[in-house]
Length: 235
Image (cartoon, rainbow, N blue to C red; front, side, top):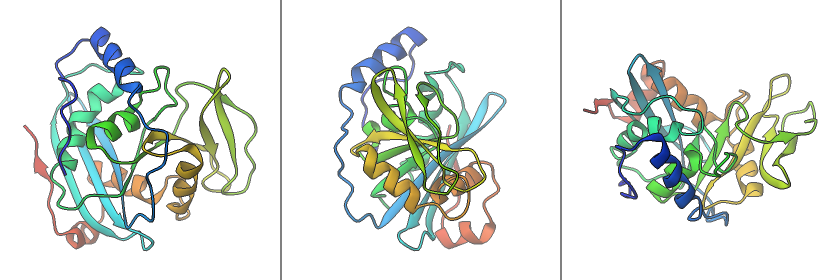
């Protein structure tokens, strides 16, 4: 799996914001997801000045792990809300580029267009990897929503002013909603559908949950062994 080179990474915050505004116009909000057989989740774990990016590919509809990769390295961009993709993308991309399989859909632990410049991590990765992506965030970066029903599968529009930028989705009864948004090459209705399809009784959809475990070094050895791959260092 190869990432596109759309810009450099050695940029300052002003340049990063300009890149986001430019790339936002390239995000496709039309769905290209048709019968995915491989669905991936990506996440990153940060510690000190370094981190671990992880990608876990699952078969659909079984949602069984078929490949896992991680990449470890240093972080070169500071923590700035709204610009996290410049901090986190390089390690996630390094993990994705080691995949031997190409997922049909990627769930990203972060925002898509539910972002002040409509260019969160999910949209950024979608453009760089040229794959359909969904933002599955645990908190709101911009926008507001009304009440969400108590039962799993209920959702409410997330609106930033007059624009619908995502949805607050109750993925499991009794837990706080997650925030679904278009990443790239998908529409909101389809993004909500596939986020719900990937839920298996946890707050996070299964690809995102397993990617979180992989990034934190907590994925069960059996699952990693089933994938047949070991994480490698990214320098």
